[in-house]
Length: 369
Image: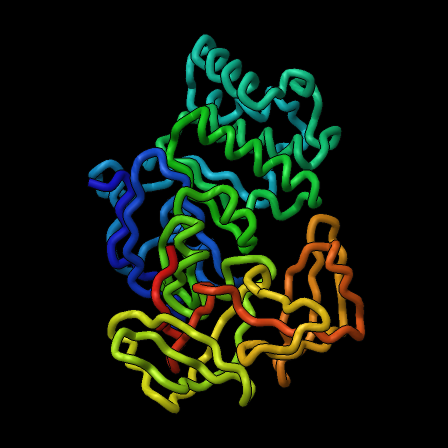
């Protein structure tokens, strides 16, 4: 039995339906990340799990107990919000202990829980400071500490790092990952940042328009997306998508696709792919999966030219941007390659790294190892 079991969950605000029959099973101790574009329903789903939004239809079970209509205080869950929601007139210690004091917990219990949270989050130097005297990262640690002292069965995070700068986001990602390993508790985390999702999650739930598009480990979603939406959302920079035509398909499902009227690329198709000769499809190549032909080499029948109009040198990698036909593409290369604006490079997809998508966006290429 899953620890957190969400069954056919629907949510409507008046005539607008934001969640469309979500089914999701989460095991005890898992780190699950909800990811998707703004408005996809990820925060609404989190808030229904927390009990902050009512459920229109469906059920939520925690440890086998039906909590669908239980108040938030009866769900053994603690939530960390995007805004720190700290009391500005209270010290860190007072903020951490406030909930326990309001519940009438005895002093010795409060002190024990406080000591544990302070030790885990290294808050000792800041106990007598007020929120206005803390950095953003320190405030977020206090907010997480306030959740820890509740000793919940499930931690819920609603975009907790959105207000932090890039360096603090990285440090807090490391701290939250270490916290999960230390506590071993179930964590459900909402973000629009797929880098956060990839680095933190045991499994990622990709949402779009209130529907679950795919659930899987970060590398499962990266290597074997179910559709073009997931393929384009997971991975940074995003996958390149190009219009193509199926030139031929043999009995074993090996296809040749024709691109830009000249290049022929090989692609292994899934069983039941339904692709036929002459069919229009979309092919996908991740920026890091291009092969560049050496300068001075005669172009092969699999290579296409890409005139470059922008090169971003990022240190460990360079991102080169150009066009294949009218389609903008990104190519990740080693900086020693020395590409420059105005160069034309000839590229072909790396073997076994070409994705193919049908008319409805479904992935029809063979699953990758």
